[in-house]
Length: 285
Image 1 (cartoon, helix red, strand yellow):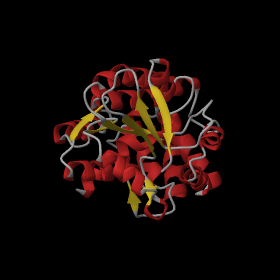
Image 2: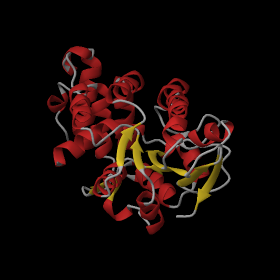
Image 3: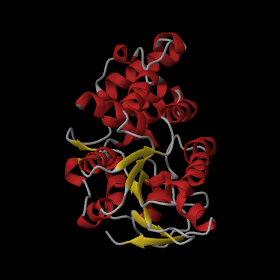
């Protein structure tokens, strides 16, 4: 189980950026109603991994999940076949030492050893996106982690909810491979070398206080969040999800758990749902 959880984290963690504009209310949980829905559904913004001491889970969030019919995450973490595909896609057919030019390989080797005390050899058969995710583990000042998607999944399974995903493992890994390459790995290590745990602590503080505008300002400073990456990792996926969500919500109440990055902005899930005619209301958690 621990191996599965770590593999899921490696594949999803890097999608947990926070981009928001034009959101005046601070909340991670939003009710979706109107437009003929028989029952309201909910969208909850997650941070894919967080230190156990910072884990934010309230009675309101738990009761909201309890009272819906289905639990949908970005991908269906309850589907073992889906998870097997994800684990397979984390591995590269071309070894790292063959993918990188000698100078860049040596630069990465030195940074890995200096910043996170890891031997580059252990990354030899991983994709660049998987390496980014593994490094992200080292950016947290703890070893005891909580994963919102897994915690919510376990609860939903105990409550015998219907499970689903807004995209497949193949789709998510394709996005990661397009967006997170060798340069992103080196940039993240340089940021960690320069700032230590401070950036992660700032992000977590903003998340737990639900300060969405502050999170927007924070993430705009991210070294890898270029316009192209933003479009691939957020905008395109948000539009794809909102095309799927209406049919899912039509005859059932759904608890959607997605990275908080996807909630806000002109192309965020909340704005797109509102533009589609739904009523969106912040829920105090």
